[in-house]
Amino acid sequence: MLLEVESLSCHYGRIQALRDVSVSVDEGELVALVGANGAGKTTLLNAISGIEKATAGVVRFAGRDITGATAHSRVRHGIVQVPEGRQVFGPMSVEDNLTLGAYTRAKEEAGETLEHLLELFPMLRDKRHEPAGNLSGGQQQMLAMSRALMAKPKILLLDEPSMGLAPKLVDAVFAIVERLRADGVTIFLVEQNAYLALSIAERAYVLEAGEVVLEGSGQELIDNERVKQAYLGL
Image (cartoon, rainbow, N blue to C red; front, side, top):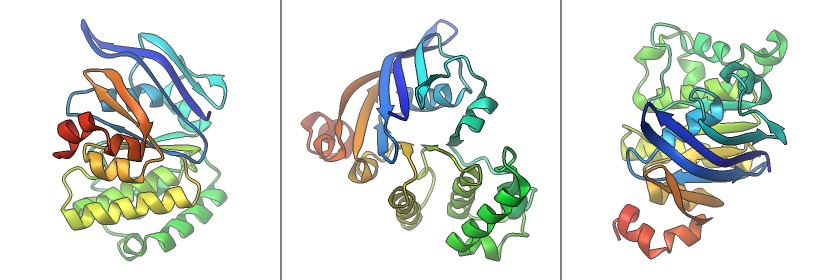
């Protein structure tokens, strides 16, 4: 397994946000994590990327225990997160946002990746000199994903990529996620739109009140009666 989270717990003061959570992602997989608002999905991603400190449990990456590692060292290991709400640097240009994503890499290598991403996302090439804050929500999501890819991640942590987007833009963003998966990018996807997430995931987990309550293939969870009633509106 590329990523292994074992019996992870996190607290905000006296409030326990995660309780004995265990998940794994193999190299090349797209694994989804679904659940309601407040279930602890973002907390788990933040604990994996080092933004939140675990109070118990272990995080291993490529066989190495990184539980105590800093967030910036985890980026160097290859763990890169696209945050909820995109969080692009609005006053800076699109190109400067992308360049910041490659701060751990040699300038020449980063330049090659930049050109590749501008070919992959023609919209970004057309707007490369404009302030990122001028982009639409969907365009900012594509920029946030591209900024993360500038770091050449071994695993991409995607947090609610469909949030706040119109249906057509959601479809466009998920088409990009599927394309990245087809290109071999390992993805751990957190998404409130359970059907979309499960429909493209090889494996998935359901998180409720800070605990994993179900796991299986994406299709198995789509067919699960509990998931249908709670998350799919069926």
